[in-house]
Length: 243
Length: 243
Image 1 (cartoon, rainbow over the protein chains, first blue to last red):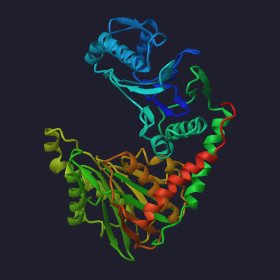
Image 2 (cartoon, one colour; image 1 turned 180 degrees about the horizontal axis):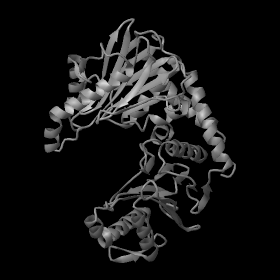
Image 3 (cartoon, rainbow over the protein chains, first blue to last red; image 1 turned 45 degrees about the horizontal axis):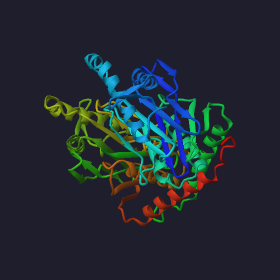
Image 4 (cartoon, helix red, strand yellow; image 1 turned 180 degrees about the vertical axis):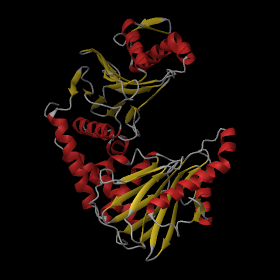
């Protein structure tokens, strides 16, 4: 399992991925699920992946080598717009399906992958897309300015209640870490360390990319402070007068 | 879908169930999923059910009519201990499986049911059990003093962080309502109104049983106040110094 979340804010993007992969609960490993394609001053793209690791690694490798889209071969470093970048990722997913899908199905392995692609290319807006196993995709909109892949349920309530387009980047960082903390506590197949990326609208370069480990002082403090704040919060709620 | 949660606190029990059932997303109805068997001064048992409605109603009807357990026929109003009450519910589940399971399997309908049974019988302790489709069961323990059935993920983080055996009943009411609110916001197949029951250890009678509707002033206030408190809480968290 995996949990990745991306926030599409007026100020920019906040992207967070865990790093645990598992083939059965007795076979867990650490793999980064976050990839970046950045040309400072020209483009910054960040891809996060959930699903079958053989598929997600094949998708990324194909994107590195070049994928055919409408008769031309492109990478995320050469593609002309974020919309076309999402199409390119979709085309890479379809190419992996063409190569491996039939044999996986024969062996009853589901062709399962989903990806979050966020970024900006000079001259265009910041975008955040969710690409499905079929290679089609949706994008974040003002009503729903965040997208999640993998084990999304535990970490969704705080995002539902707090994230808007106007959320500042630094609050966005707190919120994705709190959302991840809720998930880490409940699903053993989502695990530390974390990969965090922060992008500021118009910068066309990564603002911050950071590996957050179990010993990270800020994350440790945030986890404890958040639990304490929740306990304070419900104690301050009025009790029902009918009890 | 369904969401039911029970808290097993030193002061007593807090039980909460939604009322939405659905056969496809275009066929939803309101059914109570909470049943009580109370003999004031002698016993108070509360049963909440998730899963196939035909199964859960059949289980409750069999429990009303009497179920055979080790050669004797009992109801929840005559059974001698909470442990035996959980066995009786399990026996009712098995009886329904005997009656309907084969035909359901023939038609590819899963035999799916889970139940929470909480209560106290004079002379014994307060107990909270989770009974599975196979009729076997687990009970709440001091390390994990709450049990959930149905769509449990959205509402679990707040319980994980806040519920202990020492949580007072009134805080327990707030916490299950907040947990339910997170679930209602994210899963359309969990719906209002809610059935809430509060039991105080040793009372041997219901302390409060209440239907919480969308217009319930306390629930409305709690939902808004909780969202506001969460937003305050994350804004008060320190920002990372590395951003």
